Every structure is written in structure tokens, then in C-alpha cells.
Image (cartoon, rainbow, N blue to C red; front, side, top):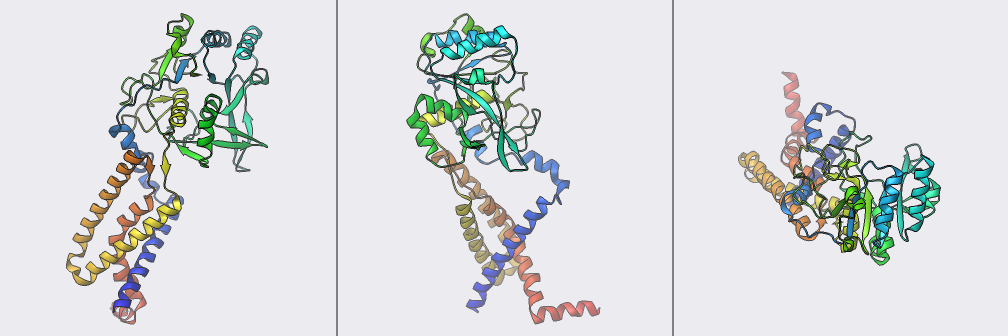
Length: 414
């Protein structure tokens, strides 16, 4: 009897895992498209967003990173900005925009000359993905006359499901390093740190993760889009032209020049703007909250502060989920065999408690230890376990037993 009970718990666990595999494949085949309106509202929400959006307190201003809004300036205007900034001795200047094609000869000449004067300059390229080869096999690049004076980092940010500007672009992570052709490139933010504090960049890259979670610290002025307010000091191009700033703000700092609206504080522009986990509305978001250049600044700050996000591997998550499922099946089997009339209500209550506990655990571990648990399979397993185990005992076992098949044959005769 004892042996039979444990065999039932094992086979019951395997049955539930099989159902989960089946549901996963059905989802991939779009069988549940009727639920898309609900799925789309929740698919881009993670439990850890609650930590960023609601629980964490704003951090002090990141003083070694300064952002400069280039707005819609022509190349001659950007060149003048760079000359003024360079006069105040920044440690690194990064320019997060492209200069793909020749424009007016005077503006191009001015920009090239200004780049040539910068001791540590980082420009961007964009890695182009080819689905046919499943690789980045080409580049969207700035003209060589400009890049000859600079180091290069790729500007790509990971925004799942976004293929064009108007798509919802929710960015939680980024690729650290990618290969295109026969050359390796570092992400723009990593390359900035590599130029500013190479030992910090080396330590970060040596973590060996292809993709890292961005540990967001905050934003520039966002008018309530997040709870964080101003974490990075930012200058508008007009402030730079008028030299309306304290030179110490720039000296020996990383200066990131990027687009942050037609002017600093522009709330209408959506160009190069993303949703992030620190958005005040972490579910059903309405307005994007952060420009791409500010996301790169958050990456830089995370590396400089060595304030990384670690996360559980898929393998560990799977092992923990299977163990939790087995323990749940064992408990539910005991209830099924000893107090069957209490089964439905008791198992539902236990499922609710377990799911709430897993949610609480995920949030608290992330908030306290910067560690992201991967318990997705555990959530699904617990949610299915009660009803699925009842199906196993009430249907599968009966189909496999002579008595069960005999009772079923009586129904056929009727």
C-alpha cells in the first residue's frame, strides 16, 4: 500500500508535467488567441516590476554620469556642443546618435574636427540581425570619417516584441557583447565604462553573462512618469551653448550626448523612448518613461557601482519547480485518500497560499538581494496541481485499471 502511494505521487507528478508541456505547445500554436486581449495586458508585466515601481526608494544622483540633450540640432550644432563640453575636460564623451550619410560639407567638417579633439570618444553602431543565419551579420554604422576618432559600442537595446518605433518597447535587459562578422563589440554603456574605468568593465564582462538585467537607478526629469525623479544630472543644448552650468559637473565625468526630446522636458516626443520597470504604472502602461540615452546611463551606473542583478538559471528554476510540484502532489494525494470530501476546497486554499507565498518570495528576494528567481514553472505547476491530480486519480488511473474499464463499459451498454 505504501509503495503504491509513492508510485501514484510520482506518476501524478509526471502527468502534470506532461499537461504543462502540452499547454505550452498549444500556446505556441496560437490555440488560445481568443485570450489575447487579456494576455497582451499582462504579458509584459513581471513581479520584479513591483519592486522597481513601488518598493524601492530613489537613490542619490549619479554624479559621475552627465547627460546632454542634443535635441534636433544639425551636425554643426552638435560639433559646437562637443567643443564646449570638451573644453571642460570630461573623462569620456559618448554620442548616442548616428551620422550615417554625408550632409552639408561645412557641418560634416566641423563635426569631424570636434571629434578629433576629444581624447576619449565613444560612438555607436547598430547590429543588424539576419533571421536566415540567426546571427548579427551586418552593421548600421556611422561614417568612417567620424569613427576614425572614436571607439565603438553597439546601441541595440532588447525590447521583446518591438519591431518598429510605435511598438510597446519594454526594456529590462541588454546584451553585454555581440559578434558581427569576425569582430566583437561591447554594448555602448559597457564601452563607456571600459574607457572610463576599465577594471570595472572587465569585472562586469567577466561575469560571463551574454545578457544582463538592467538594475535601474532612475531617470532625468520625467514629470511623474516614475517615482524616482532626477537621478542623472542633465543639460539641455541651450544650457551648454550659454555655458549655464558649473564646470565641475562635467570635469572628469562620463558625458552621454543623446536625444531627449526637442528640448529637455519635452513630454510629447516618443522617438527613442522606452518603457522601463520603474514606470509608475507597471501594468497597463500608458506613456513611455525613459529615453534610450538614459537607459545607457543606467547601465553605466550599474557597472560603476557594481550593483548587478543576479538571476537563477533555468536549470535551477526547473529543479526547484519539479521538487515543489512533487511535494504538492504528495500533500494533495494524502488529502485525496484520507479526507476526499475536503479535497476540492482544501487544495484550492493551499494553492492560493502557495502562489501568494511564491509571489512574496520572488519580490522580497529581488528587493533584498538583487536576485531574480525563475519560478515561472513553479507558479504554473501549483496552479494546475489540484485539478490535474484529480483528473489523474479519477480518469487516468481508472482507464489503466480493469475495474475502471469495467465500470466504463457499463456506461457504453446503456
